[in-house]
Structures are given as structure tokens and as C-alpha cells.
Image 1 (cartoon, one colour):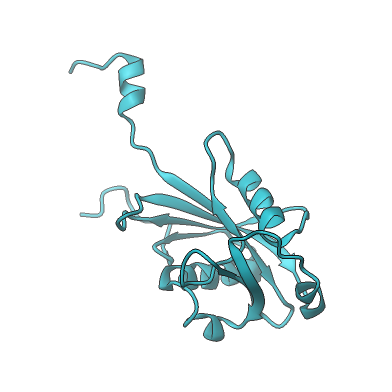
Image 2: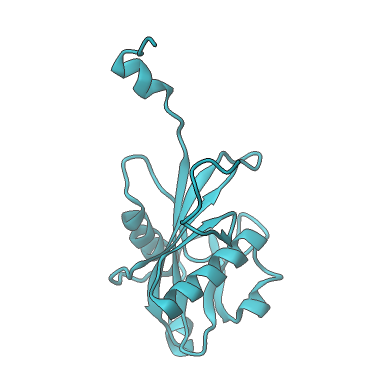
Length: 169
């Protein structure tokens, strides 16, 4: 077997997009969602990881840009593999715990990012018609992670077992 020179091998490696979001939650289980101006579905605060930027810095940057908060980041709750869905290539989505937030704190948020029209706290059932089904699964997994203190791995918003074998056949 002939091996490629290292630089050629490195250039041939698959590239994946990445995103990072933060789940803020009220004590009663409602979650903070942001109504975006650039698409129909609502989102959790977060966005695309820039080149040379780790996901945790993306999460902190996006939360500050979108909803004006500069808070310490909580634990990683979810890693979600998202397959290619045109026009978007495959990627990884990271969800971090933003901690609890109250109705009063949400009302005081200063929205200065033109990408964000409004924000609100919603139960998962209230959120489902507003968000993409993959995000609904990811939020459900994140709420489970908060309740159990465990990291949840997902594929397209569906929790998976990490005890699966490498060869699914």
C-alpha cells in the first residue's frame, strides 16, 4: 500500500461545518428561543463556528452578539451529527448549558443584532411549531442532559447509544 505524502493526505481529509448554541432554561422547563430575521424557524442563541474558533468561544460570542449576555458558559450538553441537507454540508452541532433565566431577565435583554427579531421562553411543546424538528430533538436531548448530568450524542437530533460498534453491519 502506497501512502500519500502527509500534506496531500491532510488536504484530502473531509471538512465539516460546525455550529454552537446555548440552551438557557427557566426553572419551569421552558427554553429561550430567538426569532430570526433570516429564516422562518426560531433558534437557540448560537451560530456557525468561524475558522480557527473553538465551539465554546463561538457560543460565548454568539450569545453576546445576539442577546447581549456575557456569562460563563456551562457544560457541554449535546453533540449532534447533522448529515448533508442541501444546501448545507454535513456538520457537528454543539449545545452548551447557559443556565437558568427568568421571565424578567428575558424582558430586559437588549436585542441589537439585526439577525434577531425577538426572544421568548417556550415549553418544548410550544416550541415545536416554531423550530426545525432536528432542533426540537436537540433541545429535548439537552434538557435530558441537564436532568441527568450526562452528555448526549445525537444524529439529526435523535439520541444515539455510544456503545454501538464501528461496523453497523
